[in-house]
Amino acid sequence: MGTRELELVRRVALELPGVTERRSHAEPCFFVATTRPLCYFHDNHRGDGRISVWCPVPPGVAQELADTEPDRFFRPTPSAGGVFATWVGLFVDGHHGAETDWGEVAALIEESYRHVAPRALIGELDSR
Image (tube, rainbow, N blue to C red; front, side, top):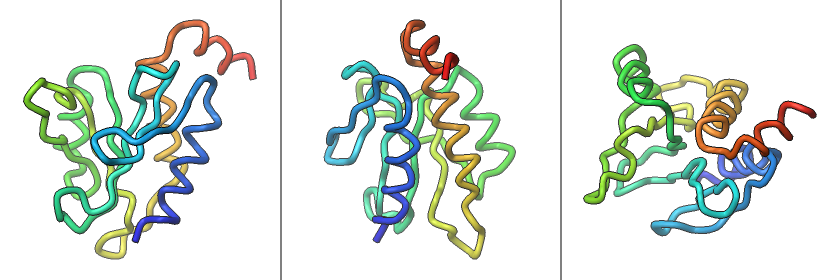
């Protein structure tokens, strides 16, 4: 279902310094420096029928985005251990005829990168 969307997310994430991909929680996940999650790609997560990207963001940002544009942004349910408590989800499936702004998706992933990446890798990104 979401092959095209995964390829677009993959292209954006893997262009960033030190990012790798592997499955985590049975979903494609992109990591910075092999251990810091950058974003998850979800296709029909728990049968929701949607395609989304989940990214860590600074405290308060996820709630602000979800409150402002609930048709596009949401707060993922945190795991029992609290993972995803400060993450934001962005629907990327063009649901209800809305076109996905892939520039916006790339900007969200880059901002998440800047939130979780070590300073040296952020410096490498900025020197490009």
